[in-house]
Image (tube, rainbow, N blue to C red; front, side, top):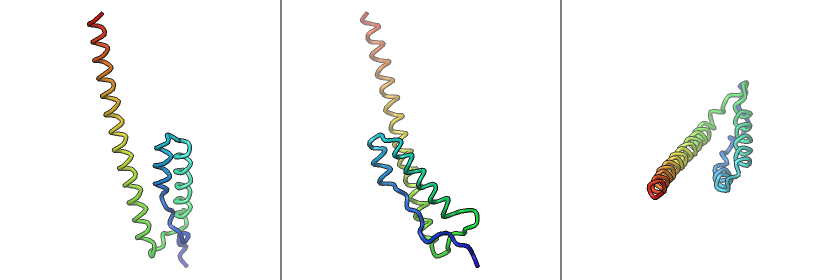
Length: 101
């Protein structure tokens, strides 16, 4: 008999992650990711095969992972742009102060 993964496909705690990250609670975000990682690894253990009847659920989970990665990448890029803008303004202010005095 084939040893299929447990019945439930783990759900990505995306909303809880967004909430933790929105509060800059990186410890909580890391704990959520660690728990999710453990659940996925347990469901896809070395001796378990995904149940073919659950392939759509696993695909939804993979899509949710990709969507969250895309969202985090966009936020990272936006933060990097903001930092560059602040650095540019800081250099401009420094140059202005030097010229004045």
